Length: 382
Image (cartoon, rainbow, N blue to C red; front, side):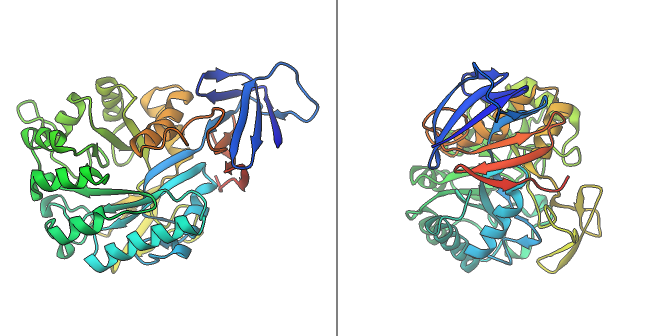
């Protein structure tokens, strides 16, 4: 058993924010967590910084110079996870950008194999497309788009070691298909879509439980046509991912989302590309050269291509752009995605019995170190 004592800062626990804490770790679990009463000589001085539950990112396309579409393997997932671990990510879904059925099958197999191999942090897989609307394709290659069919539903629905999340345009699927996926435990999310409010609500009723990167790649909310955005802000059921980089969504709209929905079902996501944690920032996506500058990933025509955002940066931005406290930002980065994935009993909060996954941030919310299953990972570059 290892004892950690934190002083002179903030510890965001399931019971509230403490100024100091004593945490006992046994194996990969928190055996006990309590407020600090005495200050031992070996206490960790947080110097005004934070201990937060490890971040969980449900949309990670790449990192460390690796793109999941190109490295759809255990090694590829491990490299991506290692790059993001330095920024506080202790759990993630490697995300496949719209691809052919054989690549989808390979992505599912790779995530299962990575979990079996004990790759730190991998929780399943996110299949983003190709069941998307051409008019809202973003950087996705529309030549790969297709409708859901029985064979794909069977592939996605078969037993897997981790969570399977799939992003679809609801208007390109039958409600019975959404019901079938949800009944099989697949986490169905709406994205890259032109679905209207009525269609969105019907999809929610059928079991579609989330919205992929709210505001982006969907119809804008208008006063007579609220669309998916309006439906998601009004309906308490769907979980909503937000890319809080100040590029994908205006800070004003981030604040509006928080005030309209509250923060209890908002999830910070990165939509990260290979540039995160990489020295060489530019990369190639399905034959297209993507330039990365000032935190923005874009094709030559200006189309956004994911982000250069990490989860520690998303937490900082949530504090500064959304006007939430750091513990609420931690909830959106850890507690909420754990609940969305059905992993509340294991992850997403600092409490006795949960996995020993946590991140240390300094007073400016920059990463200092990450622990996954009680094992330390060095902080990423600023």
